[in-house]
Length: 132
Image (tube, rainbow, N blue to C red; front, side, top):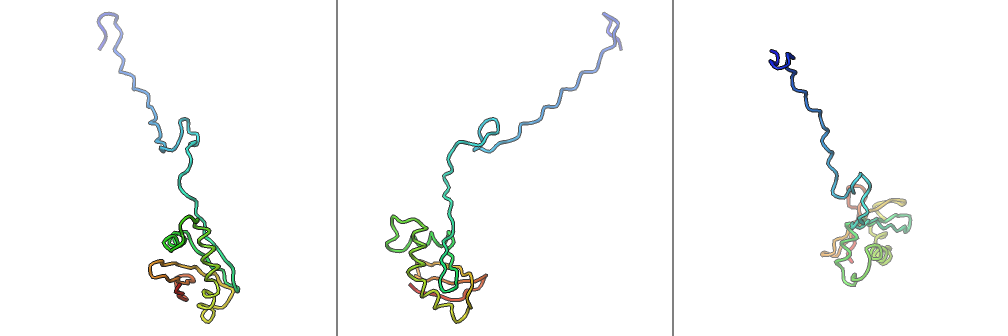
């Protein structure tokens, strides 16, 4: 079919160019993809270790947090509480596992502040319990 006014056949409409959808950014990202200048409010927690009699005792962050439930914990950091706990009960922890687990060994200390017990674990097995 031709256009009666100028004798030129009509052209099909041009397809619209595809525009890439903007990639979603996290709320923390600043404009332009730069890293955010906002401070990180999460606390970086690290385990506390103590070597004693060939054993390496380790308190993980959740167990350090449990120490906050104990009396006299107010105003102390998790690291301070962990170091004080392992120093105060280190001899008893060693005595609780010495017959069952030869040194050297890495032992995780799981703290239950309500029953006031520390569970000494290696792998997935509890090797000793100390009341405090």
